[in-house]
Image 1 (cartoon, rainbow, N blue to C red):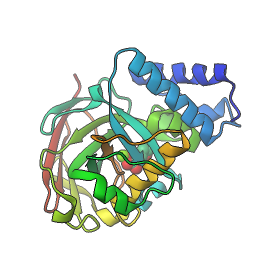
Image 2 (image 1 turned 90 degrees about the horizontal axis):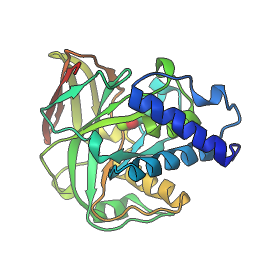
Image 3 (image 1 turned 90 degrees about the vertical axis):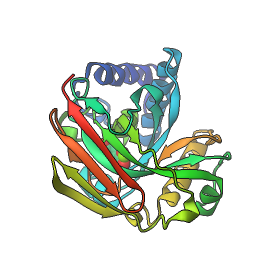
Length: 264
Ligand code: OOG
Ligand code: MG
């Protein structure tokens, strides 16, 4: 760690203000070039504690930068985890407001809901599958608080993995009812095809991403409790959206999710 406890709190406040005020700030490493990945997680944990102390409820976890498409798009080669707050969940088919976001982008993901606790280190995809109650298709709306959506790993981790909104689909599937490595997804914006992918883009199998998340949690001394909702990472690159756009994501064999974007 290169940051002092005071600096961790200072960066927590800087990120929190940008999230709440929906404005862009320079990436944190511009001011703190020696900041490490561990520092990024220290800021993220401080952010999570602050939001919970303010009365927020954590709704789950996310792992990101798990597909080649995302790593290439963002110029980062290591996955990162973040937390999901309940007040950032939106119902499938509903409207997402953009006035309270900086420069949102949409991603298609598979989300897992667990029925047993998972703990690392050494958590495997097999253990994840055995502990999974069901999977659902999901959209994530990410929104980096950094100017130009440009960052490095310590900065994006401190910004909670660009977490902004998430939209779980309503159709639930047992993991043995489908081939988790072969879900084709298509993303349409305003009726036009803008991205396609197959779920094995996520580390070969999205269950591997969940195991990786459990192992990263273990490094922070945490386990993944039963009844956790976890997003496994974008299958395709993320697509920018603005007020007036409508999005339709079709997950082959798992149904579709639509959402509309409005200013307020
Ligand atoms: C970081 C978050 C990436 C994913 O699914 O890959 C992510 C970012 O690209 O801003 O959520
Ligand atoms: Mg994501």
